[in-house]
Length: 573
Ligand code: C2E
Ligand code: CA
Ligand code: CA
Image 1 (spheres, rainbow, N blue to C red):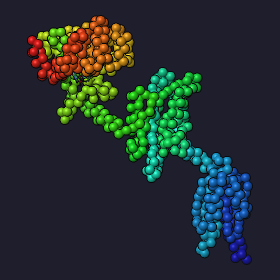
Image 2 (image 1 turned 30 degrees about the horizontal axis):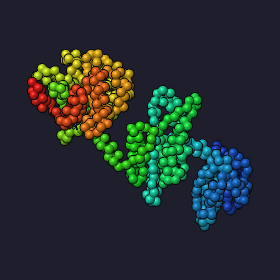
Image 3 (image 1 turned 180 degrees about the vertical axis):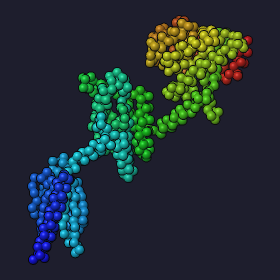
Image 4 (image 1 turned 90 degrees about the horizontal axis):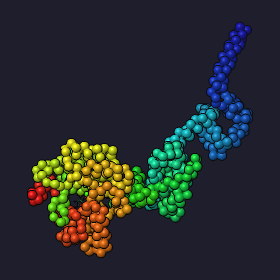
């Protein structure tokens, strides 16, 4: 009896322990936010527990109920989840699968574990179901941020590069072409400055959304940054040829974009096009080439499309090389001045000297100012270079004055950027005062292009200089916009007739007529006239006979280094 009692007590104690464990186990399942179902193959027992009710509006009582789960899923996931729910059929022990419900928003993750007996038969299995919707949406957001531009909804640069890489790989296999269009809004800064950044953003957004409408199987569009977009077209032809796309862009732009404040903007675009395989096989180089041509399109007057070609790249690389060397040259002051004499036609006496800059590069090679001055004007290096020219010219002038005590004018070429600097006029006037120079022997040469941008501002500066006695000469007359109407408004003393007239004046009747009228007009306005680039005696005689006051050119004197200038003065003594 005692033995029996003992056995019963032991069993009770064990049962208590088991139900305590089960309580703990259930609590854990209930608080885990997951749903479970357990199936015992031997007893055919199926139990659901955890948060089952929160996941499914039905319970599972037997194996034939299991497919009810599949009915809640989006079609795409039915098959993989079915395999997972009956994992024992494949003999696997563990598997998991993310699935979306029919509502298209809710995401569950299913995870199955199957235990097998020693005979290889399944003993039992447990399936855990988790709600991963929050995690999925966060992931979606991250994915969006990684691939898209939030302002326009277009792809971002990184993803564009990836997709373009796919295009190029495919084109390599299929021997196709891929066009890359680098698209930049014209004068966007003006919009940002005048209307504010919020409106600027709206313009970028509207253009971006419009360009996005070209997206399709063979076209990808991205926003690179600020107001720059890129489009890649696989196998561009027919209604997706670059020309057709560009025409559609033009048509849309001409209608204007209406902003939320009611203003209508007509911002044009400059487009550079580079094509695989012609421009490059490298995706980044393709984009770079397209960008280079876009800058060409800008420089050629904006609102246009230009195609990349090999000489363009050469040109660009040369500019970059010169730009790099130029920085060093400015730092080391690797420049020298040449001087070209100017003579009065009537007396053949020396009128003055024009200072012309030369750059000796590190290999002692002379680089022409026609090559590096435009680059220096673009990158701002013209400011220190120009200041050096002014100071060096004045230093030479003072030296010759001291040595030869002769009247002559020193002419200094001035770039538009220099002229626009606030300290331009004070700097020149300071030097004149400091060295007690007769200001009427200092002449600055400007071209018409200086006047195009800020006519009034430049004019005021020239007036100040002139009031202080400095001479002003208008260079290259006849090559720019040469509006005769403003000539009498300008504070100038001298007008230099461009070499292109002198070149043709003897052979071409209409050039003759124009040159004669220019000289005539200049004389009547009371300005002095200088003929540039006089190379032959005949040209000299002709210019003299039509009343031109001064000549400058290879005939009477090429530009010479400072050491040779003494000879010019000595001859005049
Ligand atoms: P520019 O001011 O019109 O200078 C005249 C150019 O014509 C000079 O070229 C001169 O060497 C050249 N020339 C003079 N007579 C003849 C001739 O009879 N035949 C031929 N074939 N050429 C002649 P350079 O020195 O190469 O200068 C070219 C341009 O570079 C200048 O044109 C000027 O625009 C610019 N430049 C030169 N020095 C400076 C400078 O110090 N500052 C700035 N801003 N520009 C400069
Ligand atoms: Ca000049
Ligand atoms: Ca000139």
